[in-house]
Length: 363
Image (cartoon, rainbow, N blue to C red; front, side, top):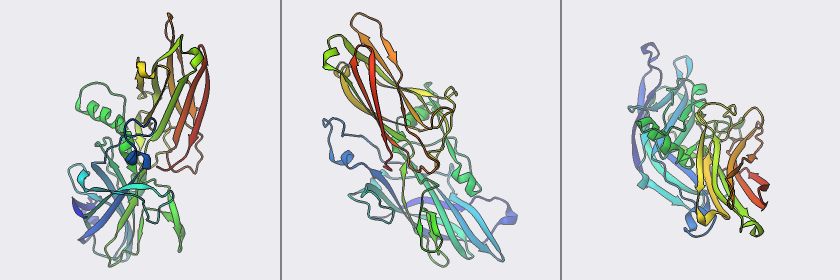
């Protein structure tokens, strides 16, 4: 299966003095997104296993190309020459692969693959290598700059806010918050072994002089999944019930696209937003399970945290709130966003025993 992505890539440099002779080549592009096996094999009604997701519709791709221009060696950025630099993907062109078997397979990932080609205008001189950075999303991203250097590419940030109004931008932001699990990118610091230089960025395309480059990228979640399980002890159910669970103080502002584990924000910074998990749900008042996706961030006190406010109501009394924080330490070498599991168990009236677990898993 092959389809053409309607895009022309051109140099990001607009100075006529730096213009070079170019030629158009058709580059095969294979993009993969990992999907938990349970997502595609389980059905609604299997508690805690069914997870909904949507296939990405927008591609953001940047070619950092090193080439010879006469006696000079240059590095420039090439990207789609569209109105906003975005390539529209046809969701019907995604195909399910049971197991990803490429060189980056570490976990026997179930994946969806997008197989296509992109016409690219590249320098006609000797092309040495390229590093490709890519991201795909279900909804369009806003706030992205137009990078002219590799550092600017790896530092790209997209807008994420808790906007609730009805302007066009606010609606886009709401859609993005609801589709964070459908946002994937190539982490800038994911390196793989290379026989010649020891270790290279996994999106590097080498030895492309006189040949057509081939892009083969497995993309990863930009947001963390928080899997939340709650339970009110049987002995307390006659007098105690959960009336509301809200994920509070989530990251809002400008979030890294290719550095998902390097977002930093103070705890009281403007832009944070909340998400209601349940509210006065009779079926979940004593026990339940839900998940949500959120951007991980470091703050001044902890490397990473996920705040869950739980409102409890004892019969005949006003609601009382608790704000447990699930924490996951982030080391300097962490590449993939963590998958966090939080267990809330209420054993006695208005006291809580909190057991927070976290697991790093690049899915």
